[in-house]
Amino acid sequence: MAVSLRTLTSSLVFLSLLLSFTEAREILVGGKADAWKIPSSESDSLNKWAGSSRFLIGDYLVWKYDGGQDSVLQVTKEAYQSCNTTDPVAEYKDGNTKVKLERPGPFYFISGAKGHCEQGQKLIVVVLTPGHRYTAISPAPAPAEFEGPAIAPTSSATSIKAGLVTLGLFVLALF
Ligand SMILES: *[C@@H]1O[C@H](CO)[C@@H](O)[C@H](O)[C@H]1NC(C)=O
Image (tube, rainbow, N blue to C red; front, side):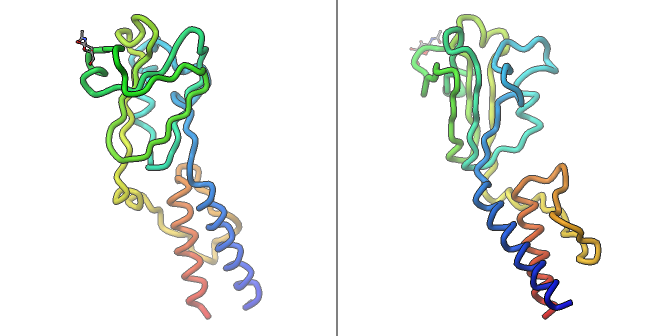
């Protein structure tokens, strides 16, 4: 009994460490490779996608597109609203663009291809402040029910890790 609990605890600690090293996520914009384009409808828009995603400091946004046809411009709020492609904050046209979200708050992106922003090829990503990170912790499963890694399909790596740490501490407290 004691041995298996100890083994369980070390596994949990190991798993937590593993998750903490893999925490910087690369998030494909739009959720698929060809998503950086003029949306076919409102429900297909990138901001609809962004609204249902969680972005944390340290995450990377990744765009995959044809660099000969399109580009990604990081712009100010004003330029975002007016689709002004002159003088962007940053310009990427390599077809495989990676931007690190290094601070909380909104990030504005528009397409650099002529007329695309006006037709809805634009994106606002709001990065949560660090204080919001642990608001979505799901309760740790009871040890009796624990039968392997607690990977809930809807949990983020952060809440899984927090849950495992909680569970690990709980198991340790049994000694
Ligand atoms: C677009 O932005 C540039 C640089 O900020 C500015 O000089 C220009 O007046 C803007 N154009 C429009 C149409 O707002």
